Image (cartoon, rainbow, N blue to C red; front, side, top):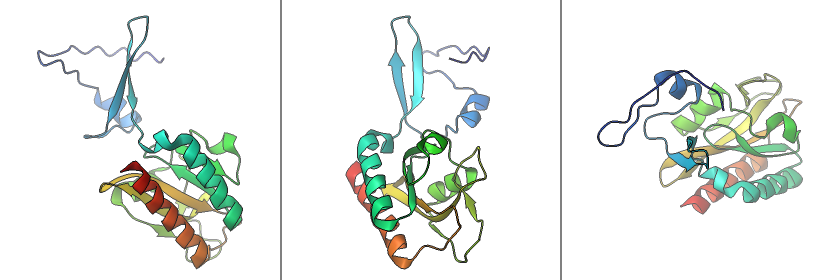
Length: 179
């Protein structure tokens, strides 16, 4: 665990303020759900809650199926990081933070579809400019945007209408699983 040197007191209602620097670094926004854990050493741990993360193994199997059917690389994200990937290196993607571009698409509930071959529109990962999304559909559950289904191709090829429909269907299906 990383020490920050910041000390906060609990108020009379049991609340503690998470410093702005930590919220910004961890991309914690107003209204974001947090899980609270305790351990035997008396530590209290706050962790961002990921409803899509609850689907971990299911999302992985779904990503594998999509990649097998489409012949494209696929990743599924929550609002912060990649939780499932198939057709590309798991080491390069799994549990890596999503880029600000993908974060923006998720928050705005917007889709992205690459229009021309070779277009470099939307980076997928925050720490790499190697991979670009060809198709992005947000996962919506009970009106909340909770992640995204992303199809990508290292050759920056435009995805067909079938692949776009597959991504859209996957996003809708995953959203319904969370309701």
